[in-house]
Amino acid sequence: MEAYKLRYIKTTAVIIMLFCLILSYQVVPVSAAGEAASTSILEGVGFISGVVKEINPSLGYITLYHGDGSGVSPDAQDSLSRLRTFSFAYSIPVMRDGYQAALEDIRPGDFAFIMLDQDGYIARLSTRSYYEPVYGTVYMMSPANLVLKLDDGTYRSIAVPADVPVYRNDRPISRSEVREGDRVRILVQIDGTSIHVAGIDLIKDPKPVSAIFRGNIEYYDDINNRLALSGIEEFVNGRWEYLPVMGIKTFAYNRDYKDRPSGRISGMAYIAVQQDLLGEDSIVMASFRSQPQYEMVFTDNILALSSTLKRLELENSSHMIGFDSGTIAVKDGRLVDVSSLDTMDPVQLSADKPVGSNMLVGQVVVSNTRAGKGSLTIYRGRIKLVDPLKSFTVESFAELSGTGWSFSNTPKTFNINPSVTRLLENDGTGNMMNFDDSYINQSVYIVEEGGKTLLVSTSPYADVHSRGRVLSLTDSGLSLREVMEYDNESHIWENAPNRDVAVPAGAIVIKDGSITHLSSIRPGDNVHMVSNSASHDGIIIIVE
Image 1 (cartoon, helix red, strand yellow):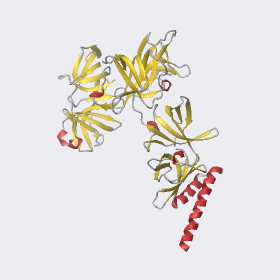
Image 2 (tube, one colour):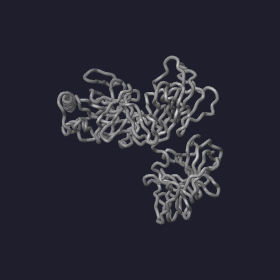
Image 3 (cartoon, rainbow, N blue to C red):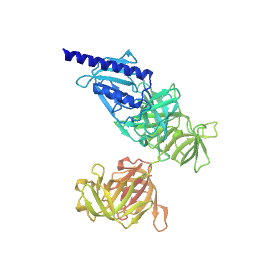
């Protein structure tokens, strides 16, 4: 009996302490030290507190920031770098801002107080409004500032200190990994003119824009949510290329894209699409314009851009080009706002001069800052030593640089990471588990990025450089037109006949700064190819 009374008194004291703490948060600022001390006492007897990151009533769990319970006040020094997740039954008592509530009323950013039962499950949950979630698309990210494009089309600039944590899939990531076009949720606390940010969550990694099309508008099917076009062209490498499609083709609207045609529409539709899991194109942006009258395409660099005047200048053209809300802008595969492009970004641009206007207006702007090899480096050398699954050393090496190989008469060692490093043999994919002393004296290509060895290929020597535009993929490789070949004696590019090029299984294919497969090359792509002088096979293919 005495033990029961003692337990009752202890529980009552803790509950009183809990509600005093809640009250203190509402009326008195709490210091970081005091807060950490109070929280540690409560957690020792089964009480947890923290900022709500996510709550899922259906699956029965809640995730909090603050792995150690500290850092809940704006002046706290501890960064929100760890997460905790707790389970609950749907019938638990819930309070929000002092009133009885449902689990669905709890919002990300609320400050939560949790009482656990003896099995570690939530017995009671009480929250109060604390941080507000703000959703938007990253328009611009700087070391101290984040500019979001909100869902209503407005822009909001928020100061983000360097110690604010950033998460993707509940894992901390570097702020440098956040890019324009990312969909994010940030938790903010506004006190007068001051704003405190608790954390940034990348909601999902957006799929890249797979293609940009245009075509004559036939009709919009509002029942099946599809747009029908004819005479369809694709914008590939700064040119409009007709698709081998006869008649009418329909495109579904992506469910995340809310704009739909209103009333009867006609003229020309410009659409950006993404591929779904079944490989079908779905519209993620569409604009409707009159038939082009005075169209021009440009491949250039941005010299200047004004979001106020809604116009941009190109480095090598005297034309002033405007843009509007219907201009489709894609940067590094992501749909972005035109004004988020940077000075000297390379662009491929299609523009038309509307009737009654003296200025060209951009229909499509595509910027690919990762074109070519990007940060990849390609070496060639003869293997001298192999330490299986750890490293290998070449006697000397040559680095691919422009239209030649830069030779260095010194050994070089490359690390092997079995989970990263791939091996390509002449007849296809090899196995790094078998990469041993039997490869000594073998000449290989090595693709490296930031000290990481990504690929080793045993393909034959290649020294003939050519460029061309892909007409189509063939059973054995690709067909090129507008071919030019580099003359190593005169050091100039000379016209060459159109040709079909065989691409062996061990060839190195690079697109958008990443190692890829031949199947990722599209008709219309411009490629820089290094071929074997005897077989004329394409050994290294870089999409420019």
